[in-house]
Length: 396
Image (cartoon, rainbow, N blue to C red; front, top):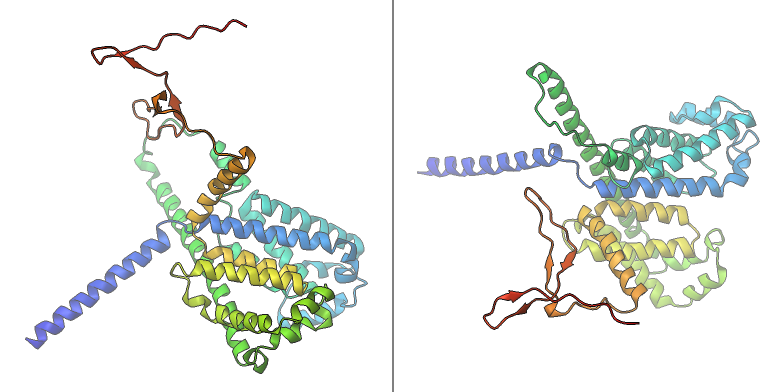
């Protein structure tokens, strides 16, 4: 009897494990996940780095040029120790820097638009890596996260939504003949199927790496803050607001610093959100947490003058929003715009207007969503419908 019970328990556990493994395999290889989130990451990080390059355009020679304080010789010496690489150290001439800078601007813009995204994602990673490694001590901390995300986005299919590639694919005519290929092309079909599965797996792994990177960043930052005494007594933000390097608006920083209770609560809430972030991702609690983190990053951008870092973190948080959120967001925006433009909601048709949805023809899978108004019908004394009388044009 105990042996039978043990065998039954082992069988149940084995069945459960088999189902979980099968479900995980289907999740990994079945379809690419979070395509809209990948598009948001592509557009967000492309715009951030394009803005960064445009902002530093007047100072490009002082940061990355041959006359920079961090000379090309120092950069090469650091590369020997760290293993970094950069295209910018191939030549010390100003003309080469101008050429690389122009190509970097074009690459970032095309990456945002989603033109030949596979190629542009690789070039964008090369651009970010080269500019980051060339002057690693001359920029702020925001480009560290952008560098990691640029490398991860190479693995993803980030051009399948909201891109020129997706628009071009939709514009291609659908072939009328959908007959199966001859048996002689079975090897070709298998190779294409294997390619699709490989692309799906690599994309899903890339999105998982991005999500894991963000969780690791928040969790480690929160645990690091817990170890500090200033975060424990609620005075950490007071010292941060009084650092001259991070006071772009001294009057605003002094105004916030006067409210000691607000600063203490904000400090404790920051630590709590960062430590708890990896544990709230699988429920609806993540939405208020992401909203609070959004407010926190906006505060860092304004009060401490770190817009690149805050923007990189805000874009990274977008990976945890499901695709249905991005699908419903444009509809909600159009609905709000219609209400604000019209001032009042559109009048509802009268009940006798006979408003019915349009009927699809034979074989139609989707009917029109817009109602079609028919003329009002009258009934005779026997209850049979009569055609509405034609309306005569008015005089004058």
